Image (cartoon, rainbow, N blue to C red; front, top):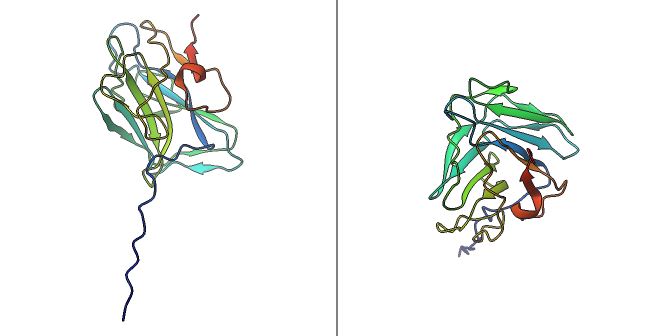
Length: 171
């Protein structure tokens, strides 16, 4: 007789100590299209092939905006992924980040297996119950910064608390 074993699915929300969102420009001055960018940092001890990794943006819910291909980030390095009119290391056609302003918006990175690696939640209230790295509804938010300002990581460790991890870089 055969025995069937039920094995639970892997937890989709993993968090990581490999890649962190380091800085992001989600609301450039003037028109956004063509000028948005995200900077990511490899804090692991290994080079990481980002092929198949995804960047997601959220207003109402998280949706893929870019699937990365042909990018390896070396240990300890920072790279910028940006739209055509930026000075980014890697250009993509569109990021389409939300601008904040009335409720929580978010940006996150997923690895090639679909595990959440890092999440940035900004502005409040979290009306749409966007999840943080743990998969639970986020409770802590980076500020909504003025047009032309960036949000940058101020905490070298990911605490899963966007309020403590990010600040307005222009202040």
